[in-house]
Image (cartoon, rainbow, N blue to C red; front, side, top):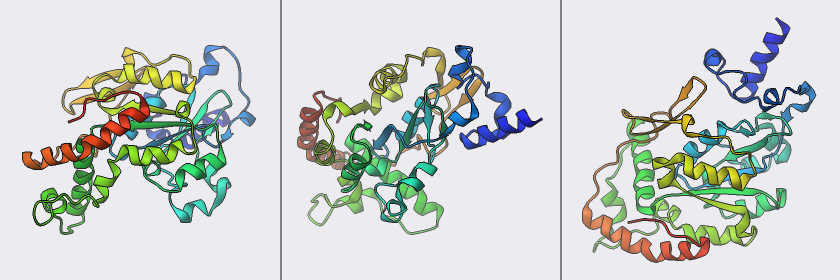
Length: 302
């Protein structure tokens, strides 16, 4: 009985829903069992992350984290902590921050994700001050698609709270049809502008860029690169992904346990005027080229 209680406690502290523990094999995320070795309870504790998913918002950060969670060498913080970009949280100190992390073992790396970090003015310097060797994951997608997805989430939230809302065209187009480039969702899609701040503190070798579009279409190929960047043993395989026809994207599975992202992911976007889409593509084109030059690769955007 005592051993069973300890097991349930560990599951809860690791963020696993104990109501569904029968669906999750205990050895799924237990690499020590593969080596027939035992790990003492004293080795389990909360640790500061060795890798952070810094963004981008509505770029696929949740999908990336969930896929990483399948790896037995990863302990993922499933709630966005907003430590480095929210003053109230940052003032609580690193002790508080470490307490937001999952229980992990020294053979695992702890990963946190807060997409708001990427566009934060202070997050790069603060993360560097904590750990200059931090491995950063940045997942990007077509900036116009990201913008529309960003608006779609805000629209959904305002409707749910019965608050007034504007069509995207009303927000983006000023009198005379000039683009409102100060709209926050527009600013978040200026990847080169934000990445430049991170490169002031971190070498490019410590920032891995994930193609959000490819992650949706071919998740395994992108995750192979992520495993390599993080120094993880190759673990994920074709059996960890299956295409859900109803949702229209890949879901996750591991030894009988299946999981799809929640209903907030993959929401249908509102129809956007074609002329406006062309204006947006034109506006972002130069910024995109700057970003391509910075990361040394190109993406099929617009």
